[in-house]
Length: 520
Ligand SMILES: [Ca+2]
Ligand SMILES: [Ca+2]
Image (tube, rainbow, N blue to C red; front, side, top):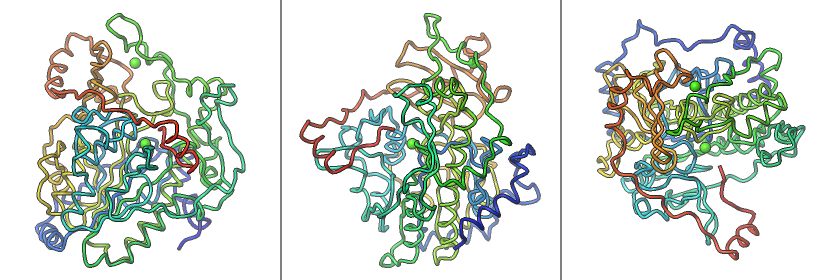
């Protein structure tokens, strides 16, 4: 295994140009290569399918598009994911989450149902308490039911406290582990704009360098655990192996060497457009949004650049951990018949729209990384512009693995796109945040309707305004475009599912056990 030092040295040689201003721009797929798989590829795919593909399902918590091959921030150093995309995988460059926070995003993609169908809209709603979700066969259970061996480590389902301890979706897998070890070993330094601002409420908005070497940190250990599973036989069954990576979720605490990849004096800050929120108004003409408290704290402490560097450092850390798994997969007997799906559960704002966080229905919160390897089917080194949703992963995996379609699935299999990334694919996709607030994109426009508020609207044209600065919803010529989108809004909006409720005694029991649910 490579040592961190060798890895970092390699990192620093090649992509330093990116840090010095020669920004890497995403390259279009090489035109000399055929974009559809050949007949031989398809025949191979059939052979694999008859054996049963394995599935490696990798969730990265709060990772937005600041990944080299996604182009969200050209300064991001992610050589392992980039190499994986170049050599083995297709990048779905217009992939969106079904909801913009962990809980409902994951509940949706794992049940295969929209938030508007289950009423699971927030992190405090366990799908097991939702009348419309509790009996749905989730993605891993469906694979288990059809002959797969299913196992997981880390956060796949959102975590919820219950009277019987922490529910982390362990019931959905034949094996679920939290690999032992994995801590910070104390902190070398920490920084928090909230503290600088005297704003204690923003306390969780912090970053710093941990003392532990990378090999002793949580995500490295989890990746190594997943790598080790690839030496197993699973009783001759195909496997569905799910790995949940915990960073770049706050707090942004990783070893110092990942911060060192981004010298502050070379780094470019995201441009802040101070009047960006002024054109998003309710029916009463008043602004719907104001700068969030994390933004205000970073702004008054002048820590935007350091915050953005910390997020980049965390993404490079994640990339390093995933490298361990990619190496192990390529050396394993499963290299040629394993589907890999790497996905982030929602996006993240880093000062855009004067916000640090997720939740709102803009491109930065809605767009997610989705990198897919299907040996023999999905041509590597291709960026596919078809609009897809994380909700679509369930039916896609079912189709690719040759399982019977699940009629309960509300997503659409994008297996055809993986086979032919240039095919016509005109399906606007939906992202929901809380009851009745929906956003749709068709790859050119984003339309958002705040039905949970007073019906305020936003419309952006990405062909001229990719950063969504100019809301054109009230322009007369937008009427027809908006009417076109409205056809795709859910016709049913399920009321909120019950919130997690614990008695005082239960809470005590949970605290004693040192385990609680995840707020974010
Ligand atoms: Ca998340
Ligand atoms: Ca604006």
